[in-house]
Structure formats: C-alpha cells, structure tokens
Image 1 (cartoon, rainbow, N blue to C red):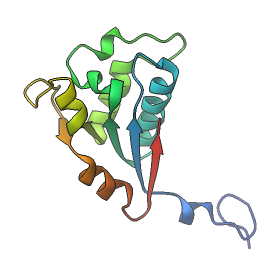
Image 2 (cartoon, rainbow, N blue to C red):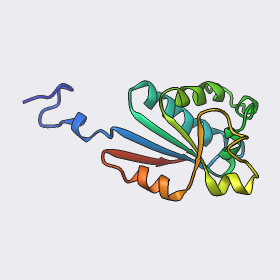
Image 3 (cartoon, rainbow, N blue to C red):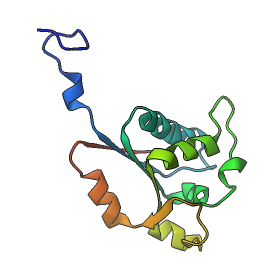
Amino acid sequence: MANASGCKGVDYDSGMAKKLVIKVTAGADAPERCSQAFTVAAVAVASGVDVSVWLTGESAWFALPGRAAEFELPHAAPLPDLIDAVLASGRLTLCTQCAARRDITEKDVIEGVRIAGAQVFVQEALGDETQALVY
C-alpha cells in the first residue's frame, strides 16, 4: 500500500521531526555557514515546524539591534529578514556564556531574543520529535 508520497511501505511523515533546534556558531567570520543556518530556520518556520535558533560564538552579535543589517552575502536572503521570520513564529536565544563574553545583557538585545544557557539548550535538543542541527 502506498502512502501520500506514493512510495510503498515508506511513511516519511511519521519520521519527520516536529521541532527543529539550530545552533548557529558562525557569524561574519563564516558567512555561508551563518546564512545557511538562518535560511534553514526560516524555511522550517514557513513550513510550520516549531523552530528554536541558538546564537553562539560569533553569531551572538546578531542578537544586537542593527548587527544583522551589516551582514552581507551575495545571492543570500537578507539576514534581517531571516531573523524576523524566526522571531515571528519561532524562538531566538542567545547563549548565556557567549553574551557574557561580549558584555551583552538582556537590555541590549533586540525584542524577542532571550538569553539562556546550556541546560535549556540540552532540554530543547533532546525533546521528543526534535531534530538538532549545528552550523
């Protein structure tokens, strides 16, 4: 018997993660990797997936107002648009330690960004029906 995708005996929908946790470790130092992470997150949000993006390392700077607008990568969607898409329907979290190393506080970040630590990341990443990716 074929499923909705037309493949006999294969049920792709049942194995699909319902939640996606993406840890972004790259910023302007690795623009392609950074852009890929946010592009995947925005596409997942648009597809109805519950998305949580974590800003770590150099991507931590994108939690600050105006920093995403400074990011440039030819043939890529504008980073502010991708971040707005995530904030509209997903979660954007700045790593506690990464924020502290850069002297970023909750009063500094754009609206909708939370600051949280490894315990929260692990809890999200190990949740049922969750796929975690690191860029």
